[in-house]
Image (tube, rainbow, N blue to C red):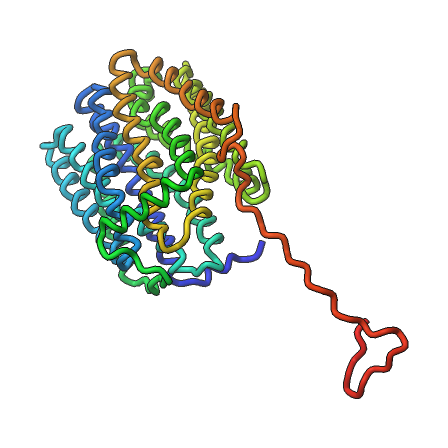
Length: 432
């Protein structure tokens, strides 16, 4: 396989390395937050408040973050968001290592870190075309997406090991270091401004309204947001993993780290299949619905696993089906969105793709507090299955979605060919 052209781009290489390292710290901290709150309170319902902190920040601030990403220097915006998250992680580290931490400290830190991320994510997505140009954007995303799964895999596993060695404070300290690295890396990256023929509205609120109107008028995007929410809200499993690991399977912090990482391992193992489907299939809508249905089955399998190795196997499948569905959804949104409004559309879409899991944590945590984690996740797994069947049962933009259909090449008229007995002119070569 030839070396990808983007590897020759110094700025992309710096950005790629910094983002992967930062994501490892972020994902590890999220996993540590869940385990930490559960260890402090012994309450699944209280642990669900971690998701509440994420949901409040995402739902309130995402539109503003997207509008700013389409108006200002995306590199500087991303750097500022990382600096704020670094400060929050540093405060939580000090409070935890001093022994003064309480559960509400962790939840407030989640609220502020997610608030910073609402400005981070739209800028991060929209920065890629400026780094590599439209010609190489496919290669760049193909490298960044598997890298994200590596971070989601390594981060929770690292969190489990560090919690077992020195408690959650050690994971929070590593997170501080990774944020600092990305802030420094961004200072050395050179990015031209994206130029658009269409100027954004004069006011921030006008920009937000323009993005909202675009999303509402695109039935494919709104339908994909609804399908996303069906899986992430009704089958939210992250909030239940501490209880499943400690109370049901009795595998402790290390086992919790393995369970938290298993979905990303499944996504990585499915990378080649996902690439082939997204690149070559013209029935991506049906693949998306099938993956959503199977995601619900895998969630039920995780809930009903009596031993850890079966739970890990179910979590692997959960991650594989989730990655397939997520890749198709995200690609469809990007294909359907012009560059000048990409930040705002990404922000609105992240209200479902990232806000859904946060809301699901709250709902699932409260439900599991009444019926227990096993019953809660079993019932929740039925939700995306029913929604997928509903989309499948009738013609609609999701079921009929084909993917990025390449334009047919336009046939050019054939050049006239000289008759066999024609004599070429002086200095002319006869065409054959």
